[in-house]
Amino acid sequence: MAWALKLPLADEVIESGLVQDFDASLSGIGQELGAGAYSMSDVLALPIFKQEESSLPPENENKILPFQYVLCAATSPAVKLHDETLTYLNQGQSYEIRMLDNRKIGELPEINGKLVKSIFRVVFHDRRLQYTEHQQLEGWRWNRPGDRILDIDIPMSVGIIDPRANPTQLNTVEFLWDPSKRTSVFIQVHCISTEFTMRKHGGEKGVPFRVQIDTFKENENGEYTEHLHSASCQIKVFKPKGADRKQKTDREKMEKRTPHEKEKYQPSYETTILTECSPWPEITYVNNAPSPGFNSSHSSFSIGEGNGSPNHQPEPPPPIADNLLPTSTPQEAQQWLHRNRFSTFSRLFRNFSGADLLKLTREDVIQICGPADGIRLFNALKGRMVRPRLTIYVCQESQQLRDLQQKHEDRDTVTSTFFVYHAIYLEELTAVELTEKLAQLFSISSQQISQIYKQGPTGIHVLISDEMIQNFQDESCFVLDTMKAETNDSYHIILK
Image (cartoon, rainbow, N blue to C red; front, side, top):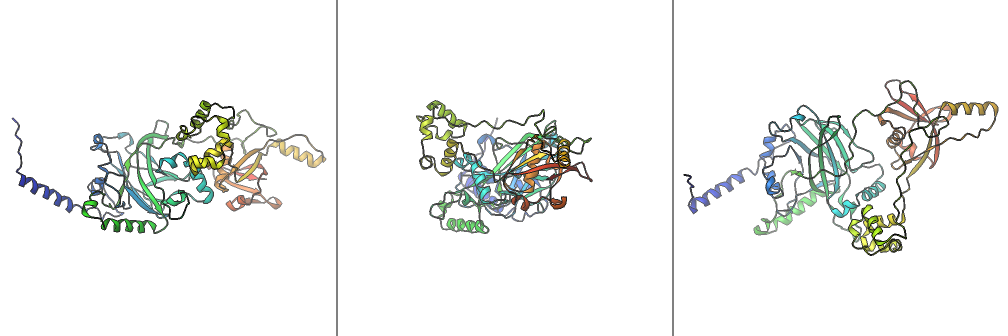
C-alpha cells in the first residue's frame, strides 16, 4: 500500500522559501569561471542553463545533447521570458566560444580518440533576408573589398586543428577538434547589423544575425559529412563599444520597470548558451581526400592538347539561362517564380503572364516587393549578369607552341594556327583567388600551386601580389608555363 505524505500549508510555504533561498545562493556560481580548465559538470551547474528551459519542447526537456557550445558574452536583459535570448557583440572584437563534450558514458563511441569538424556561420535571423542572403553578402563584398564577415582569432584559440576560411564564403569558417580535449574558439564578426537595413532617415534598427555551429564526424571514406549536432544563438553586432552601450541602456530601462513588469523578462546571464537547431541547408562539404595531382613523369600539366584545343575531358557546360519569355502563360510564370526563389510573391503575381511581368519597371517591382527582393526580381526578369571586376585569358604553353614560335623567329613566316584561351573571372582581385581559379581550371588542388609569377623585363620572374593583380588591365592575355618546385611535389606557374 502506497502512502502519500501531504504537507500542511504552512510547511509548503516554508519549503518554497527554502527552495528560493537555495536558488538565490547559486546565483553567483560561475562568475569566476575564467579561461582556465573547466569540466562539463561545472558548466552544467551554472544557472545560465535555466534560460533554455522555456525554449525546449516538453519531450526534449530531459534530453542531453552530445555537445554544448557556450558564447562568452552576456545576454540582453530586455528579452521576454519565452523569447529567444539576444546577445550584443562589438564589431571586430574577439569572443570565446567554448566547445564542450556533453556525451554520456557509452554515447557515440565511434568518435572516441577521433577528430570532429565544426563549421561556424554568421547568417541572417530574419526570414526575409534569408531569401536574399546571396545578394546581401555580394553587396557587402563590393562595399568592403578584401574584408571577411567572420574570422577566427587563431592566436587566442585553443585546441583547434586545421582552421580554414574559404575566400568565396565570407561568413563561414571551419576547423577540426578533439572532443576529449579542451577547445575554445575565439571568433570575430566584422559586419554590423545596420549595414543590412534600409537607409531612410537615420537611426535605423539593426537586423539580428545568427551564429550557427554544425558539427560532423568522419564517414568510411574519411570525409566529415555525417551530421552530429547543430546549435545557434541570436546576436546583434554594433560598432566598437556599441554593444557595451546598448547593454547598459537595456539594463537601465529594466531598472526603471516595476517588479511586476520585470517578471515578464529574462535576467541577463553572463554567457550565452547556443540552442539546438536544424543543420544548415545546402552545406558544401570539403572533400579531404587527396586531389588529383600532377603527373610525376612530366614537368607540366595540361588544360588542352597540341595547339591548345580542348582535350577529351570537356569543361562543364555553362548554366542554362532561365529567362522568362513574353509568351509564358500565368502558370509558366508561377513556375519561373518558384524556380528562381520568388515563391513568397507567387500569390501577388498569380494572374500575371510573362509579358505582364516583363512590362514592370524597376520602380514598380521595388514598390511591390521591397528594395532587396525588388532589385533581385527586376534583375532576374531582365536576365542581367553581374560583370566580374577583372577578366583575364590564359592559354597553356605547349611544346608545339614553342616550336611554332621558334619557326616564326627563324623564318619570319606567319602561321595560321590559332590557340584556344580560357577565361578567368576575378572578383576579389587577390593572389589567393587567382590560385584557386587556376587550380579549378587544371582540376587540381590549390596546395599544389606553390607560387605564381609574371614574366617581367629581360625574362625575370616577378612574384604575383594582390596589388599587381589589381593593376592588371581587363581582358589581358597570358600564356602559362609551369616549373617544378625544388622543395616539394608542387609547381610554380609563370604568366608570360
